[in-house]
Image (tube, rainbow, N blue to C red; front, side):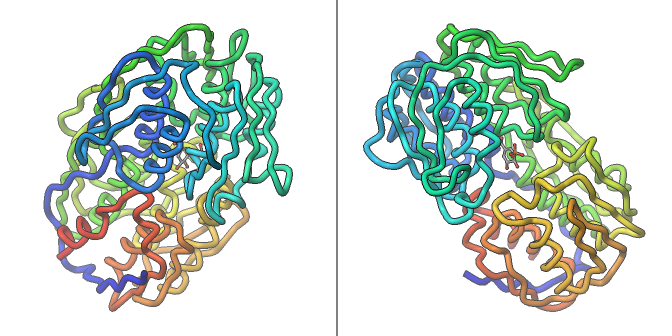
Length: 432
Ligand code: S3P
């Protein structure tokens, strides 16, 4: 579905909004409570396509999950050994998180399974999980090519490992932790860059024997203990809030408050980068619920300047980098993003996609192997642009369109339902 957006850069935007529940935390809450002991309620879960696929896969594996209301899931945990062999191929759709986390979960079961997904997922690298899971004695193979989905998983008795992550990936880390729950002996994971730590936080709440050593960037999991079901209140997704933060932060006279957004420090790279660019952002009403910090985020329009972004913060801002590109076109001076080659293996090649989209809208942007460079400010002008079926590109281009002169038509916007089904209604409410 194509979507036409009329730009209105001059019009300040004001208002108070909420954003849907965090995608990463929703996946983990569903998976971990399904293999825990007891009953749990998950409030404000994200009802987007990716998390629905996790839910359906877990149900196909025998999990007892009920959608009690649009905001509430009820789960009766099966315990670590309560899953059953699925009758069909497990379809993860577009969701890399589902594919990689479930690979870890399934590697240590006493049955075989097959994980598959859409065309995008079949192109995404799976060697990064096949390798460590194989070192744990797991047996996982790509059916048609060696390292790509569909993945055939033959459940095995696993061994713990001591593993240094070669790529900064929370999905890989979480896959190993899930496998580690079923392994003999302890699992140690070492990170060179800290990645989102929702799995570790939730496992700790569920009384798993897990410890994080932030100074050594190391996590240790000792298996053998059942997980205890827990009720989880999911905060708003900072990656979804980011679109409205971006829509307000460079717009004169704007003032937006986004309530109850997750501000886990492994996810706030976007806020740190914007503040360094000169943005006016405040956190109000900070609190901790379900072991995840959250706050109301207040954004006021300001003049921004370009900056350099590299390895130190990339893992912390990975999903927001297309939006950084959009904002950099409006900021004074040069913005350089490097060490971000991971963007090329997301739902689309996000470097190519955002460079193409913003170039078509008149931005001064250069593509590099590991990122991009932008000189600003440039006046954006509406054009026809491609989302490449990638939800984050579609929404980033919608933000760019709001700052552009004239009409922008974004192609294939149905992908937005993957992470933020209510994005367009919220956008219309606040922009018009
Ligand atoms: C996610 C981790 C990130 C992120 C993705 C969600 C997760 O991927 O890009 O949207 O929930 O663990 P990587 O860990 O592979 O970088």
